Image 1 (tube, rainbow, N blue to C red):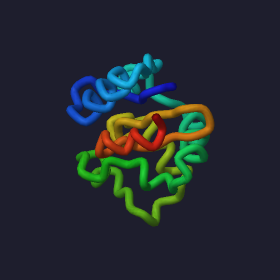
Image 2: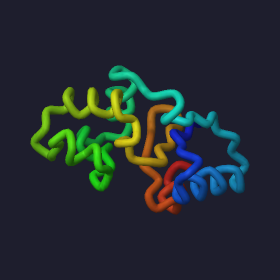
Image 3: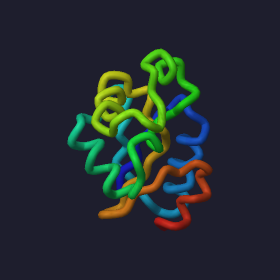
Length: 112
């Protein structure tokens, strides 16, 4: 199990705690320190079964500064996340071939 985590985010911290309370010891990837590359993001999209725009934190300044929108091509969105990892929604939990954005953290129950 992997958690793409931001230790400054309360939802991410709650999700990590919930995993540990359920006996999981996930690999913790602090994506702001270790950004994902384009291929990793594309793989994550397949596991999440969502469009690239759904990975974005639309309230971040970078979102509007870059002129991103639901109509932005997928590849451009992934490039924006690679360059500006703060745009990546969090926390993302991966278990095998499945993944989810644990917002709210209670959604984790689907993977546990």
